[in-house]
Image 1: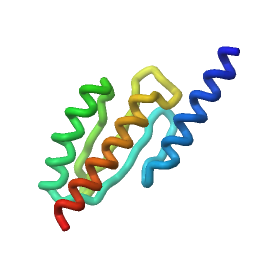
Image 2: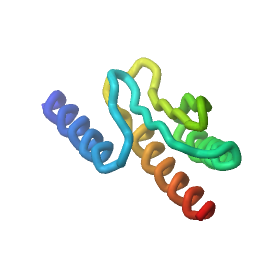
Image 3: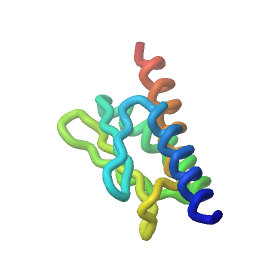
Image 4: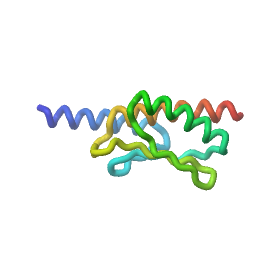
Length: 103
């Protein structure tokens, strides 16, 4: 019974991640690359930190050639966690808000 619940849990989180545009699941992490200018990057990372702290997920955020690369992973876990998927969804919301403000 426990294995079945675990499989259903993974399927639910994978389905939720599939709904988020641009996020990919690669091994133990999920990742996304966003095209942002420097001020948009700063705004996103500042807001993302607040949400990440609340969810206790530590994103790896890097800036490279005008792109913001985000990797989410919970050390020691091989499956997706609810916190990772929730943070990815919140990052998408923040990204859309920041991009809309630039238009």
